[in-house]
Length: 218
Image (cartoon, rainbow, N blue to C red; front, side, top):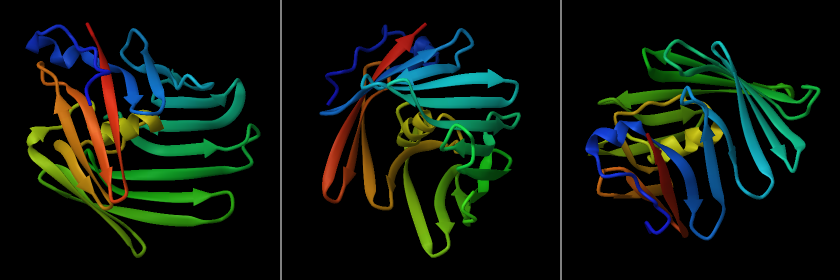
């Protein structure tokens, strides 16, 4: 499970200075992440021609997805002073005629509602409930998703939501603890000697996947 982890120097004071440099999905693709001098993500690639690049201007981030050099999608994110996304627009064509938007509202740093709309006229609203610093329930219409947490393990890079938000390119959830399960799946974590998450196993009713992390430490 942890074979792809290269690790960091064994110095517990360096834990906060380490960031994910590569994500390896067992039996699948590798995702390589590059950062700028400011610590922000510059780009990530999957090695199969897919490249996601980031451009920052003030509180706005533009995320461009290309496949073998061809336009895939363009995501524009507006962040608040806490670095959480308040508005996201995704253009599915270069002209921007096919699009979807989401507006996020917070109570402090806790996500309260998200409102989706699209060029086709569809719309939906999702509400979120929190307990002890963790988002425990999200509800949209008749669909409800519940989440449970390892209350003895604080949130850190390598958590499932960290992985999901790394791939989407922006952050909307900041939990206190590591995600243990959500409706339809559970998550098991392995740790290296410095306490970093070295691997995450995603277990679903009919499948399982292992994601390994390589870190870059200063």
